[in-house]
Image 1 (cartoon, rainbow, N blue to C red):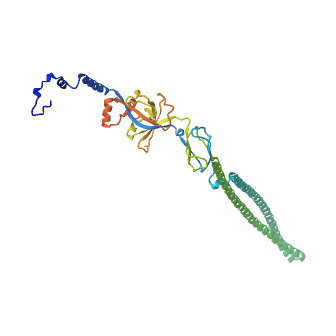
Image 2 (cartoon, rainbow, N blue to C red):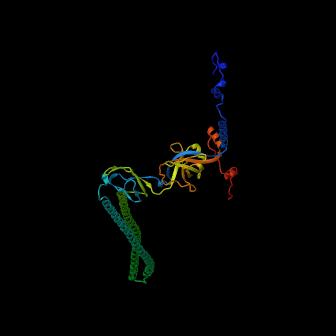
Image 3 (cartoon, rainbow, N blue to C red):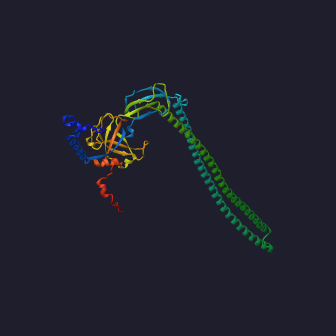
Length: 456
């Protein structure tokens, strides 16, 4: 008993007569249980030396490798009113297939003859520009004609100048001859005067000599006047040359001013024509935008606007299309502390939502229901959720991913790192240390060597 009473009766009871007391005195732990505990302890200790593959766990989503292969929203280039739907959700479409047709909703584009009228305005402006061009060509011809007339006038002036130079030369010779004759006549008059004084010559002969002198003097005056007139004419010819140059310079300047004015009008017409052509192109593109077509081969998964007669805005999404052919990928989000441990081509084990899996994180090769992958790209910029995005693609050396995996589905990833012992991994986890970062042996052997420089 408990022997807590002051009046104990323990010595008065014969325990050997009752089997209950024998069972109470037996030990509660049997030898079999003790052996089992020892065996479990030995197994646990041995398992501590088993290899363990360190890994980084992360969650992500199924996506596509190329941005062109991801689900795309079809948007309307212009605002308008829905006239007709040509597809249903789930329909497979090809590039150029009509998805929806809309009609115009803005007042300035409601003219049904808008393109035709704009084209007529363009033609009119082009005709005006051509007319100005023809006028410019004619004015250029006038400049050439004026230059030719100027050359002719100057040539005539030069010929006339040469003629008067010859005349001046001839008159100068005549004047010299007349002066010589006057000198001779004066000599003859002087001798006749002496002879007349001596009575040898008659008065009539003396008077004839005097008349000859007067005639010679008159002829010299006439020749001097003619020579001066020729010189004056030369001066007029030189002045006329300057007048011709000035006259035609004014004419050519006026024609050039007309050309510049015409070119300005031509360029204005061409500018207005280009502006009208730009408007025409805008109207044409806007008209083509009434029919919205599929930009890719894919499946219509969702229509984002409903009914007929509903108005849509510019840039509003109207439907979502998933491409028919695409390369699947998984985007995983990794903590910043684990990013330095990642490299391209790292092996990854993936478990997709909807595919049952039994995962042994430390023994990935023994996991069931997981699929192989490898790191394709690592973002250099952190995401909004505070983690770095890693793109994982299918590993061609492993089992292919299920075809029924859909874009947007969830995925759990195990990014495989170094292989260590179990006891080390437990110690690392208890201390909160990051996984080991190891480098290939080739790099370890060369990391302390000086870089080799090429000698130029």
